[in-house]
Image 1 (tube, each protein chain N blue to C red):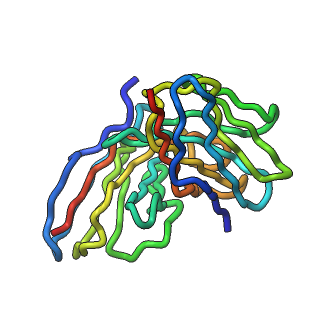
Image 2: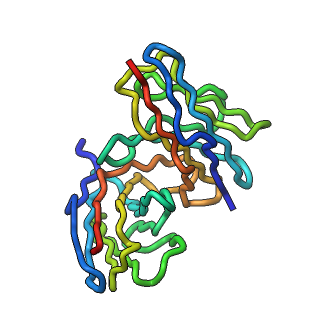
Amino acid sequence: AQSVAQPEDQVNVAEGNPLTVKCTYSVSGNPYLFWYVQYPNRGLQFLLKYITGDNLVKGSYGFEAEFNKSQTSFHLKKPSALVSDSALYFCAVRGAAGNKLTFGGGTRVLVKP
Amino acid sequence: KAGVTQTPRYLIKTRGQQVTLSCSPISGHRSVSWYQQTPGQGLQFLFEYFSETQRNKGNFPGRFSGRQFSNSRSEMNVSTLELGDSALYLCASSFALAGGSETQYFGPGTRLLVL
């Protein structure tokens, strides 16, 4: 069975400071990892994904994520957070042979001016 | 290119009724997946359709069903509604069967409230 853990329910950061949202996963075989963001009363917006290759993946809106196989982690990062980055962030995993996307519980990010 | 659209956006029903939700995928996408989002259970996979066939199914009772039409549009139906079915129902589409590296793109969701 595959699973995703987002250990922090909420992350608070001041505008302009670096933002990190943590994610660890468990899956058989090579993982495919995704980050999505959800704004209030909206669906999920795709940010980035890791398939293979470089461990540092760059995505939309200045976000990037670092894949670490030994630690089974895929943390989302942004060098300088904006107030508009305040939202709910979801990490998701899918195994190479699986078709189901499994999500973490989500991390609420609050960026204060 | 238009994104995934879902109708209706909001719905209020009473216990015991049934409901049908609709999803139109991104043009050219053939796979449609459905997810339920609740504060308690988070995001849970319901089922996936590809070329009018259900390919995968999550751990939900038989009251939850769906179908896909030849134009890739999909509907999901919930019969005999229960209070616990109150949720945001999200539809996601992808070009091919949603596996491996394929990215799923989500619609805005239908918020269902069961009274």
